[in-house]
Image 1 (tube, helix red, strand yellow):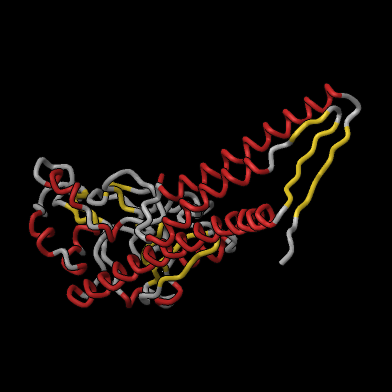
Image 2: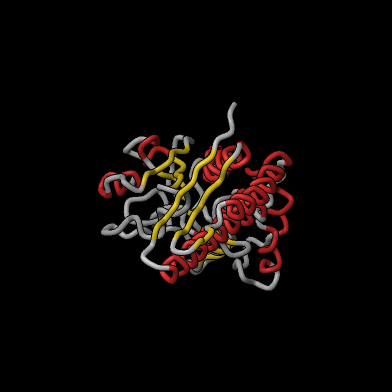
Amino acid sequence: TEAAGFSLVLLTPSDAAAEELQGLIKQFMDIGQQLMLSEITKEMQGGTDDPVELAGLQYAQRVTKLIFDMFQPVRSGNKVKIAQEGAQGSQVAVIGVLVALLLPAVQAAREAARRMSSSNNMKQIGLAMHNYHDVYRKFPLSASLDDNGKPLLSWRVHILPFVEQQALYEQFRLDEPWDSDHNRQLIDMMPQIYQNPSGQPSPNKADYLLPTGPGSIFEGPEAASFGKIRDGTSNTILVLEVNDDASVIWTKPGDFKYDVDNPFAGLGTAHPGGFNAAFADGAVRFISNSIDPETFLRLLQM
C-alpha cells in the first residue's frame, strides 16, 4: 500500500569508464527489448482468433516498451544510476514479470492445442483404416499397384471414403499414377486431416506416414490383416507423425521406411519432446524421444 522503489548505483574509476558502462547497459537493454518485442510480434502474427489473447499481447507490447524506457541508466560523473521510485515503478515491474511469464505459457497452451488437434487427426485416420479393414478384410497397401507392380496412388487416397471425402475420391482415376495429367490436378485438394497443425511442411504434403520397414504391417506387396499382428494391436504402430522434412505429397506413394539401425531418422521434431503414433488398436499415444530404440523398433514391427 506504500510507495515502493529501488535504486542501483554503480561506482566506476572515472567519468570515461562510467560513460562506457552506461553505453554497454543501454546496448544490452536494447537487445533485450528487441528480443521481447520480436517474441510478442511472432505470437500476434500467429493468427490467434481469441480477442482476449490478442488484447493481452497488444498490452504486453506497450508495457514492454514502457519498462525499458523507465529503467534507462543515468550517468553523473563517475556514477551510473538505475532507479525507479514510487508505486508506478513497482507495479510496472511486477507487470513486466507477469508478461515474461505469460508468453511461454501462451506458447505452451497453443502447442498443447495443436498436439491435441494432431492426435485427433490420427485417431480419424486410424478409424478409417479400421473401417477399410471391415469392408475389405485387410488393410490397404501403402500404395495401389498397376499390372506391372508399379505404384499408382497412396493409401491416403484409398481411405478417402472413410474420412468423409467420397466426392474427392470419385474424382481420381485409380488406374493412373499420382502424377498423371488428371490426378495431378487433385493434389491441391488435400484434406487438412493429413497435415500436422504444429508443423510447417510444404503445401499439399502429408505428415502422417505408414511404417514400411522390415516386419511392419505394411512391408511388402501383400496387404496384411489384423490376424497377422502377432504382437497385439496395442503393441504395433499403424501410422506415424513424421518431421516436416520427411513429409510427402499426399497422393504420392511414399511412406516411412525406417532403418533398423536408426529407427528415429525422420522423427522426433513433430512436437517438443517427441511425436504422436497411432496404434493398430485405434489408440494414439505420444512417443517420447527418450524411448529406448530397441523398444521403439519392436513397436514398429507386428
